[in-house]
Image (tube, rainbow, N blue to C red; front, side, top):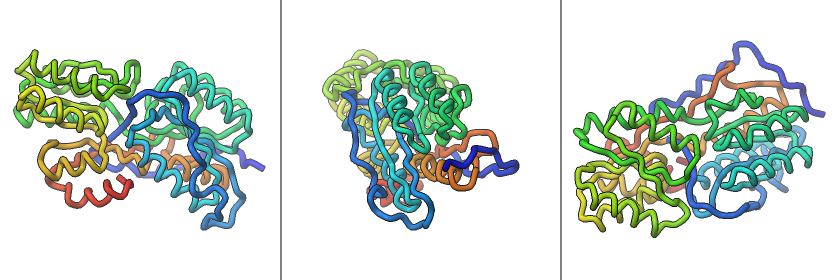
Amino acid sequence: MKIKRRRLAGLAVGMTLALGLTACSSSGGAQEEAPAASGEGAGGSVDTERYTIAMITHEAPGDTFWDKIRAGAEDAAQALNIELNYSNNPEAPEMATLVQNAVDQGVDGMAVTLAYPDAVGPALEGAVSADIPVVAFNSGLDAYEQYGAQMYFGSDETVAGNAVGDRLTEAGAEKAICVIQEQGQVALETRCAGVAETFPNTENLQVEGTDSASVRQTIGAKLQQDPSVTHVVTLGAPFAMIALDSVADAGSEAEVVTFDLNADAAQAIADGTIAFSVDQQPYVQGFMAVQSLWLNLTNGNDLGGGGPVLTGPSFVDEANIEQILPYAQNNTR
């Protein structure tokens, strides 16, 4: 039997993990039903009732960012005796359908990315109406309360973007392009807007994130057309690696900086070919989304004291990359 949701006064968990990474995916594709997490079918380390939690994201095939989200979610599921049902689709209507499917299946809890709140939010309200505890994570900071999600785990993309703009200014940048790989994705657009707030000479560049060759060509063509660009800001680690090729293709001296981190981008920072990453700690997002639902179901807890629990942003650069690199390689950063 599900425990009634209630807010425990004073349970404000100070998990703001200080300045720098979000979000989001890129690369297109159809719905992908992933195998259940490592916790499914195996006993967890707690002796409590086994719950089923649905995790629904806008992951697109080939985006390594989501490996870290899933690693955190699966570790929490295994530790807490949870059956984790993971599904994803980068298209908003299909994501809404996945949410409705989870409601129809009668899951005990639901963790959802709100990258497309207008489309997915109403389906989320249906879960809330069915008395299913819901948390949002990774995307939807400004919308999760509107649609009834109890908690939010992720980065503040405006703060993250502002921090990047400040750092560009400190570095003496002249002009930046901010590469958006997924049109209409609110977190990505918010990041670039945040960069432009503190570094006004920033121009958005829309690319087709599902086509790596096209991304490389589009960035390279822009750099050739506008040699005043001194910095390329990408919104995901895989695109940072593509941008490095674009810079070489164009014979440009522009520096590449990025949001998010993967093993390749971390190594590039260590090698000095990417200046820095602003990290939102996706492993933490996945872990806390699952753990918070378990705490709610077993003990009625809500985390955050009525506000979001921030997992970033924090900078990864030459000053701390040696410490961070092993975690990036192990898929926990």
